[in-house]
Amino acid sequence: MIDARAVISDSARLHRDVSVGPYSIIGPDVEIGPGTRIESHVVLKGPCVIGEENHIFQFASIGDDPQDKKYAGELTELVIGDRNTIREYCTINRGTVQGGGKTRVGHDNWIMAYVHIAHDCIVGNQTVLANNTTLAGHVQVGDWAVLGGFTGVHQHCRIGAHALTGIFTAVTKDIPAYVTAAGRPAVPRGINAEGLRRRGFGATRISRIREAYRTIYRQGLKLEEALAILRQQAETQEEIRLLLASISKSSRGLIR
Image (cartoon, rainbow, N blue to C red; front, side):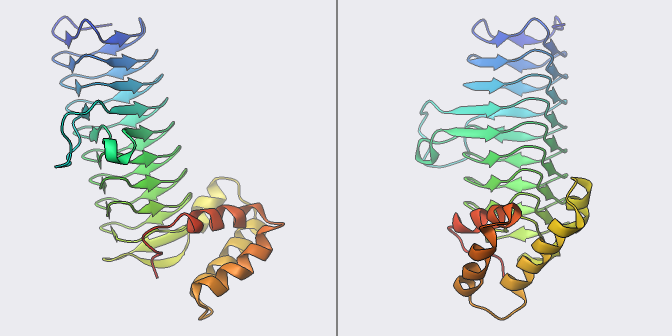
């Protein structure tokens, strides 16, 4: 399962089911779970933990030092979950002490070619990061979010669960859960209704989310006035609670 031309550190810990292609380099303090496939010419540096059944394609660079001028060689980490696809030329950096010391990628993500995930990012589960998506440091991406090709996300921004961005979107403020955004800078364009239908959301739940979107963006209310209305609805509507949670944690403000 390990090609003879691969270079594996003696302190790397690879499950016996891991496969590694030719000319890949796996450094010290890298741990890889069962069923993970590493293609040729991949570079993995630690401390880095990679879970089960991931597929990392050729020329990816995973777990290297954060691109942060404050970084001074501190011991930081990258943790990647299970069943992720990481395509060609992706770069995922470890965290920084200032950001908590850890970059995290969840489970079942589809990370397409040339994607960059910077230090201290937190990527949830079941996301799609299309080609050339770039996440600056400390970005958070919620479950089921889809970021269109060439999307760029400013540091410390949050992308809510089930959100969607169009191609060449520049995200400079937070995108709430369920919202579709596009433009440079990004502006709201509605809700990700088709994505919600594909994930089993029924017509009633989608209608509630659409009405909540109108409350925030289409009724001329101040944000706090809109949130007061949504808090009442959230007492009985789970999907509105998720929307509120994505807004309440905002530090950069919402796209408007």
